[in-house]
Amino acid sequence: MTQKSNVPTVIFKDLGIIDYKEAWDFQEKLFKGSVQQKIDIRNEVTTESTKNYLLFCQHPHVYTLGKSGSKENLLLDVEGLKKHDATYYEINRGGDITYHGPGQLVAYPIFDLDHFFSDIHKYLRFLEEAVILTLKKFGIESGRVDGLTGVWIDFDGQNPRKICALGVKSSRWVTMHGIGFNINSDLSYFSHIIPCGIDDKEVTSMQQELGKPLDISAVAEVLKVKLAELFGYVYS
Image 1 (cartoon, rainbow, N blue to C red):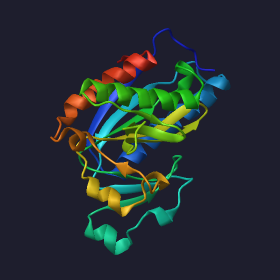
Image 2 (cartoon, rainbow, N blue to C red):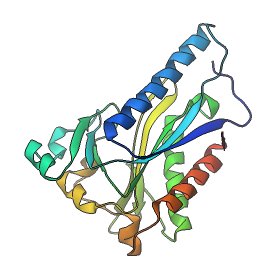
Image 3 (cartoon, one colour):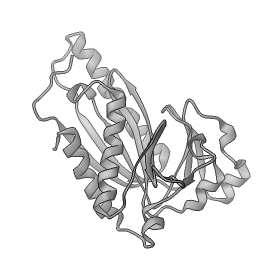
Image 4 (tube, helix red, strand yellow):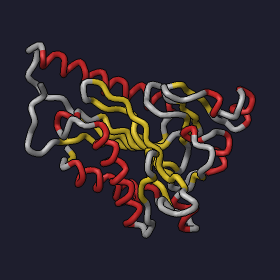
């Protein structure tokens, strides 16, 4: 079992604007490396502790479908994808279909939860809470909708609007994938899918809610701090 330190460390990398497949491959490399290291620790091949990573990036227009989703929730055919300069991938996270694109901050934690807590439900709630606290810093009240993962505006009202989607994979308590946080996103791209398989609720962004574009790097810096505070780690 991985040894726990009093204060875990996380290696942070800002990948900038990066092709989805390139980022996915990089995640897989880190993820599989951590999983294998945990196997080696258990088999007493090594005593070196696993590392934790947090990747921030943006992607060109792309739709991704999780393992529990339905391809019918993608409303574009091959020609439609080309017309909108978008790509499509069926991937190994949980959840249904979602969109990533310029103006959306994507966060991929590759955490060994043995450094924190062995509870995926709690892990998801911490990711949501970091976004909720970030939005509050910019004057936007948000929260959760019962039975639905993610972060919502008007979460307890008549018109809940999703501003952040979550989808994760874990093995041996190592995580990958993460959150898509709509900051200056082109929301028209969501009209080409049934986001997360939910057809009766809208999608929104910080720009939409505040009526002006945001400095993504400023939002990213707040989210980076809030994640560290909630999980109780430092950046190395």
